[in-house]
Length: 625
Image (cartoon, rainbow, N blue to C red; front, side, top):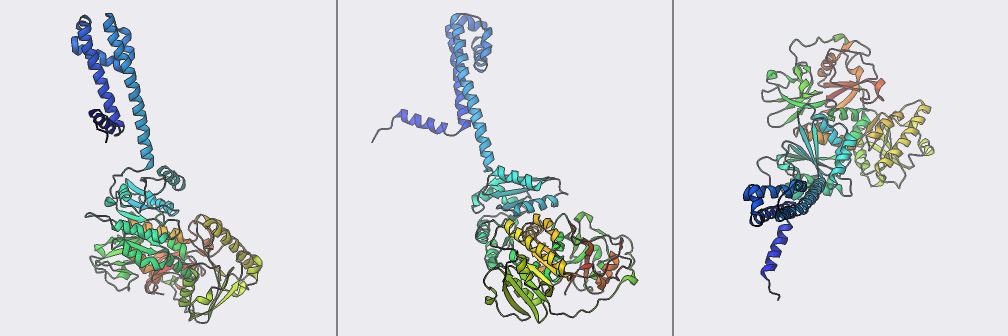
């Protein structure tokens, strides 16, 4: 065994010191500079005492030597004996090497620091911020909504942790979202599955955490792993609420167990399926839901209103100058949308109000607007009648859609499934109200559509092709919709069309097809998650809206509420709906069905502005049925 010498130990100690990076290198260069200055000053006092005495003795020589070390040009004014000038030359030459090395070390250290910052591996120090874990197309919708929601705040922050380059993420957000207003976007590179990486975005001080659904196979498994990773973290007194979505209902119990009581996990596919089925029954529902979930439109807010204590809920409908009461939230967390009109409002209740912004909610200070009794009508009874529905295409949502259609449609209704594949309907359970047939056909081919006798159907559902990528699937859907529109024009007997679209950017393009409704499920899920990240109590509101057992959003014929063409106002419409045990949220104008951005939907309008609805218009209400 080789004997370790003192020289080896010193060299090892020096190597370890140098490996500590830029600060250690600067320290060694500073020590070398000090040593050079002291040696030269001491040598000048000993070798050239006369010159040293004329320059301030040893302290003066230290100062002059330091100046020559830092600035070689200073030597140009030196005078004295040859030994003195030689020592000053030594100081200058040594300074050149030391300063040059210092510049190189500083440049290298600065470049290393910039590279480190670019990697996004430093921990942020924020408070009351929103954390997004993961990356997908969903991020752009969520960030845009958070920017809109934070417009009234002086400063806000959104922190994103994803296994991507920090600069690339920031550039993509600036390109896709645009103006960020008062919101700062901070990106960090890391794996959301690793607890140490999650700490980079300071989750312990966050207001909320959203788990972004990745665009990979088995995305639900990764979401569940991230939820488990969050559960494994040691939280202090403050634990932010967590929101996430899974796309397979079978994974929902596992995801909720992984997330724990602080997490709200929604079933994205179930939400999309219910929207497709409900939109099949009433065109325009998805646009109403988009407006309710979009921070740029009208949202639900919860406000304590002690002034309304003891008042029946029905009377509170006319108590607001701005805003429409939609329900109550009890002190125990129970949510009641469209409760019985005689329900007394308690002092500790929160009123669920539909408004454009929480700052725009205002109780009326004067008497309620007069009701125009002459304009109010009664509903016409419409017994359920059998319907024929055509479903074009097939994906993993189709079996559940058919199951819900069987629950909602009248007995003896018919459903024809047309898709370019083997018959998948044989594996479905027996239907109670539907007679199901299958035709093998390619929805993008005109002859195949014409062979289906489209004129015999009242409604058509166009499903997205899950075997294709998002853009390709939307392109096929658009081709199918164009064929349907052309065939419909030739028949002169229009049928209602509900279509599934993957990318919201394709919706405006699809308007040329004049389909009755487009369900952009991915965007709606993103909007819902953003709403929940801002207010966790809205989870119960959305759950109630999507539950068939409670009150739901309906678009009903306007002639059931107001006489067609009669001069009225929204206050009168609210009163007409109240008498039927319903809450009027707005209306949809038929002549604007295909005009973006609202597509005819008007929520929470001015209560006293003149209003005249046609028989083809729709009233948007919260109702039991």
